[in-house]
Image (cartoon, rainbow, N blue to C red):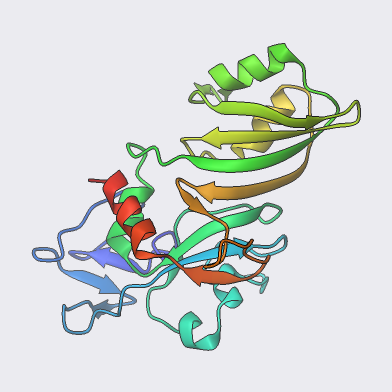
Length: 226
């Protein structure tokens, strides 16, 4: 929604990372003024995104979007949008909400909300490459922030890593792996902060499924930005 330019504050298109004061600012979605009385109920949803699904509200190529993973009763909610994105070939945890202020804050570079990934690489990664990944790699003239990188399983043919990032540059994991001489075979985001990809009974959340955040998870998210 924000990336698509559908949100305006005081007549200007809102950019990711900007803040707004609902009490002072004139806010619009799709040209309609947002008043306290007509603001939609706040929704906070976790989806397990499959491969082939794009992290947008609409797609000009008519590819399935993360909004399409929801039932019509939820998909039709005004302003529902993804918080950040996963590329089309990455699976896993993605938040959806219609809370624009939360999205603006969570996507701002100053807030380093950790995100956990399972990364399958071709070949066996060596200790030097691991250390470089942990300390940061120069990508397009800018060094990546330090990351937690641990080997979970390794053979001569492939390596399974757990990688925890506190930044979200475009295709960052794939680019770092390529810089270190490895190809990413599979990439899956397993957690956003302490929010895990599980169902209410702690069983895994099926691929393509969704659930609402718990009150504790929502409180945790808001504590990260206060």
